[in-house]
Amino acid sequence: MTNVELKLEYNFITTFVDMKLSEFETEVMQLFWKYSKASAPEVHEVISQNREVTYSTVKTIIDRLEKKHALKRKEQQGRTIYYSAAISAKKLRKPMLNNFIQKVFGGDKQQLINHLLNDEPLSEDDISYLQNLIDKQQKHHD
Amino acid sequence: MTNVELKLEYNFITTFVDMKLSEFETEVMQLFWKYSKASAPEVHEVISQNREVTYSTVKTIIDRLEKKHALKRKEQQGRTIYYSAAISAKKLRKPMLNNFIQKVFGGDKQQLINHLLNDEPLSEDDISYLQNLIDKQQKHHD
DNA sequence: TCTTTATCTTGACAAATGTAGAGTTAAAGT
DNA sequence: ACTTTAACTCTACATTTGTCAAGATAAAGA
Image (cartoon, rainbow over all chains, first blue to last red; front, side):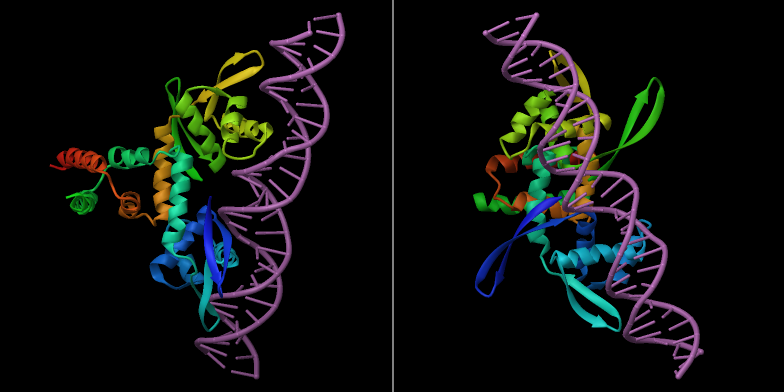
């Protein structure tokens, strides 16, 4: 997937770390950005609503995310470990989006915007949201 | 990466085929969408402008794309085989984008639009371009 | 306290992916 | 015709990824 350059600060020493998440790992991260904390059984529960997958599989993904320092243990209740995101959505999404544009749209951001707005139907909600964004930007120009 | 459902038509028989391209494979496809035909040495040449990679590696990727029916042999000049895309950019991008939104933005398209448009300030040109698109879409809803 | 149950840990494996060396062979150059 | 070169084919391999079963173990319930 994407190679995320993460800048970590260990008491005044700045280090660069590369984080690379797989598709499944990225999918799981969504939940931690949404809910701030979650346990493996909970994640399993949610993912299971979409497709068939065992607890073991989900837990393995979570373990790998922990090893990659994308998740950290937050607290424990009984035997249950609660994890939380150790890296923000924004930090990950930015390089991932750039990589996606590079690989799938040949680096042409406009193409992506085009595709998004022309080839996929926008809901009325999407449209008013977009209108709003534009209006805001418009102000900066006046 | 993404699972692309491709509808192929073999003399009146419609078949569904799943196509799954890796990141590198997707990257290589860009060139074939851009140039309509290219040889392995040419692709190698272009990719090499960005990173270190041997001809062998590139050729392997092309072979795999051929096996997946994403590329087809178009013509031969001497020993050199020229390939061309056997699937359109649009067909591939659509499911890939959807998958990306799902996995990276938790299915929230507006988040993506937000990222795209707020990342950098829009030029007046961008704005009028967008306004135009919106107006067009708006019509579909009325 | 003893049993049941839920959660975790460990180890494993096939398939996909990125990577490339070695060897073959057909063109091209001399 | 002979040699050189460029492109191809084939094989291989380490790593990553998705997947899970089996076993250990702690908490909860009887």
